[in-house]
Image (tube, rainbow, N blue to C red; front, top):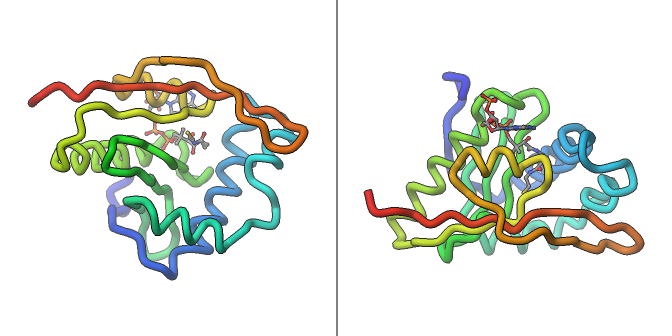
Length: 160
Ligand SMILES: CC(C)(COP(=O)(O)OP(=O)(O)OC[C@H]1O[C@@H](n2cnc3c(N)ncnc32)[C@H](O)[C@@H]1OP(=O)(O)O)[C@@H](O)C(=O)NCCC(=O)NCCS
């Protein structure tokens, strides 16, 4: 991760910046695997901020940022579910998601989690494979008339 970035926890006033990052990340970084209709279904232009606020409040969230901008975020729950992982397009392939994931795994280990799981996009599949996850099942999510493929992936945390 670029050295000027730091990791921190979520504050309520991050809401709109995180949702904007999510929209940009889906629209730009997933294009190799998901067409325009799929990306629109995944990240609608008009976001439901109330639903996002509720979702963020239910998760452990870590953010990578500097004084200017947020570079990425991860959302997970202490049962081992990695729910959200998004990198800003300007920071892609610079180790931001790796740093966020490492911090989340550290937190999950400390909380006693032994099995991690995620519903990885086809874009994130290679990322999670590199983190030691393996595909358990191919899945399909339906949003209105659109379907999106994804992979249920799991990782067992070995004692260190
Ligand atoms: C998946 C995602 C979070 C990765 O973020 P990132 O900060 O670019 O990832 P990193 O730089 O830490 O990548 C670490 C390694 O993962 C793998 N990887 C990451 N992105 C990849 C991609 N698009 N294609 C293939 N491998 C990839 C590579 O092995 C990479 O190492 P390398 O750059 O030295 O080759 C980012 O592409 C993203 O936000 N995608 C869109 C949203 C999404 O699909 N989120 C996941 C929802 S489950």
